[in-house]
Length: 97
Image (tube, rainbow, N blue to C red; front, side, top):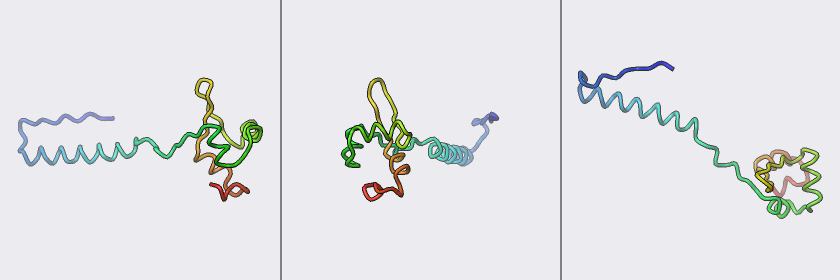
């Protein structure tokens, strides 16, 4: 990334305003680019089982087979709702998604 030096002492207030507006626009674009994806909803195993009407052994089997990705945080497991929807789309569970 290249550095640009903005010398304010020899600029008119209109020029300074233009520069700040340009910087604001670039910062807004950058903020949109790095904005976290808020759609990543984490579900507990119980929420997944209730949502899909499946049993604990079925959930564990699907996690072992890679049908559903299990994420561990300490001794707790979570599932991403979007991944469940993508992985089960087109199956008999699609009507529950």
